[in-house]
Image 1 (cartoon, rainbow, N blue to C red):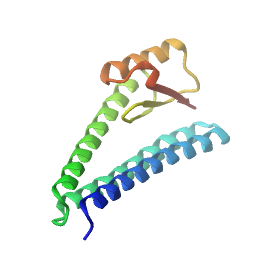
Image 2: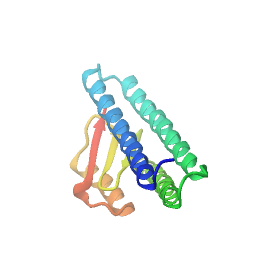
Image 3: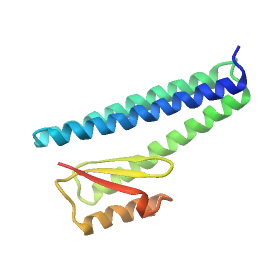
Length: 158
């Protein structure tokens, strides 16, 4: 039987691996679009692929957290941490969905938002954006989150 400390270390390690997987997915998808032909089909494919990858990753995370919560061998601290992590994940999912909808309401065809503890990344379907457009997006993010403007990154993707 694993000690309480080892269980927490394993849980934290799995969450770190999950975050690394998500970051690598974003980086690799962005580099493949940057080196591609740049047509509209690639852009649509990027947004679809990103969303499906995000859903799959989050489903795996929720299953993992549910397994910890349901396991009778899990100690109270591990169960509490898993419950807190699951609640935080669902809050992030809801916030990202709201932000994506608000950004689309500004007139963009598509948008993907990722919210981490420190930063917000906004990927919008656009060839480029003006300073005024960036300010509008930034206002939405800063108003809806507790993030400061310098922690928001806006990335146009054609």
